[in-house]
Image (cartoon, rainbow, N blue to C red):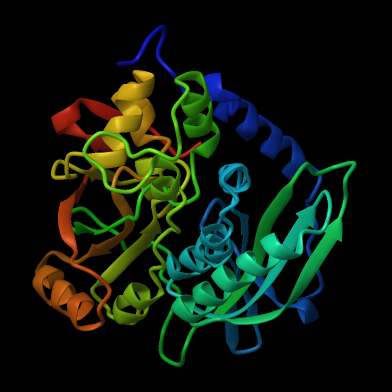
Length: 349
């Protein structure tokens, strides 16, 4: 039973407004147009991956970290899952523009080298490379005790578009389209600053299962995020696929990144259960905060033309990419709504 006032991401130490303001300040100093010989950057502000046109080829590039999930791994001495997450957080953003992953470089910052932890991270990283169908092309390992306490994990990934496939940017999303979703595997690597604060405040024993669960809480939370490369590969070349979205930090608001001048009406989003419901009750977290912080059970979204729903679901099953469920539709307007919960979000930031 939760006690005291409601928890929010800002209360745990992550203020979205401050993050957005700081990002705008950072970008204000980066206005530079490179020469044409360096390629042509495609203008997709706020999207999942940057796109650059070099000659006849288009490349996609993205970078991300595992975030404070690594603190939970450190506490439990269990590093394999977050090693896999280095791949997951990056290739899923490539998948969200329809790019085929090619190479990844990892970045490991640490306070002191730890061969045992590094070996486990490497095993998880290897699993992620196989699941994401991506090669490791080097990286950076730095010992920086003045900056990092423990270990910090991240990477950068590059993808390309096979012959005949165009980037899936969301510009073709239109009213009448149907929104399909693929299930997540827990919180993936988002919102752990809030989750960990709750665990500490409530003195939760990470070695014991929560009510109704089989795995200990710590192991359940450290489960690596699902990789959606096979799903993207199955549908990205189809003309009926109008948008793809990785539901990461920002929750359902991620859909606005596809197209801000339509409304994503998610009236069939499945009711959260398991770890989501438990965390929500633990911190008395308002539904509005839950759906704009966590993936709430859906990790990847595919927006398709209304006549392509059944065919898309069959293709995903054949590709062993998961069973997609209808979440809602695209209508006139803007933002994202979950009308059955009375929730509305105007934008992403």
